[in-house]
Amino acid sequence: MRYTRVIVAALIAAAPTASAQRIESFGPEIRPFVGAYIPTSDHSNDFKAATMVGAQGAFELSENFHFVSSVSWALGHNKFAGYSTDNTNIWAYDVGGEMNLVNEITDNWFLKPFVGLGAGGRTYDYRARGVGTKTCTTGYGALGTEFQSGLVALRFEARDYLSCFQSPVTGKRQTRNDAAFTFGLAYHVR
Image (cartoon, rainbow, N blue to C red; front, top):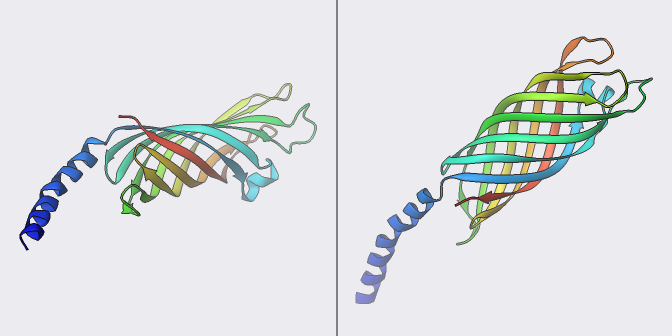
């Protein structure tokens, strides 16, 4: 009976220490990723799906909120007829926020499902002769999860983008939709 009281007292005393360690771990993260760029709706008439690579810089403001900045590149292939090449460098860059839950799976693993919102820009760098570079604004909604153990986490993220798009053929601006599905790592810099 006496040992039970000592163990309970030790666990209660250790609880604030565990919370304090979590708070001290807030800070910057580096998140490289690979994935797929998927044009949808009208955008799929002008571009093919492509592999994308990129990185995010994040700052963990609290256990449940991150500030995020991202940049990605995809070597896209456009479907415009008559161009000397269909290669198009597609650059995306944005800032946003993520809200997540923290679910303890084991003592060392945490499941962190999240939602996010952000805005930024997208640049289409057409590699065909005589076709210029076009840049427009974009916004996104994100849904994903992170499996974290210690300072490293595996991340899965899906983003749905709504952006303006300026046709290189007509010069007309339209609202377009596409998606990105990525897999990556998150390293918590301490």
